[in-house]
Length: 59
Image (cartoon, rainbow, N blue to C red):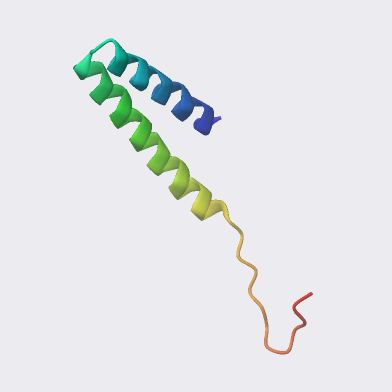
């Protein structure tokens, strides 16, 4: 859901760039980058890490 919002904001960022609204480009771009950073942090925290014991098979 967060990635869809990021894509939506990036589309508006590009559209604002086309119609030369510099302030809106900065606003939408900054929000999209901030949400992308939050998404990547949340994704890296949610990744489960399974500890392996020595002698345990890899399969």
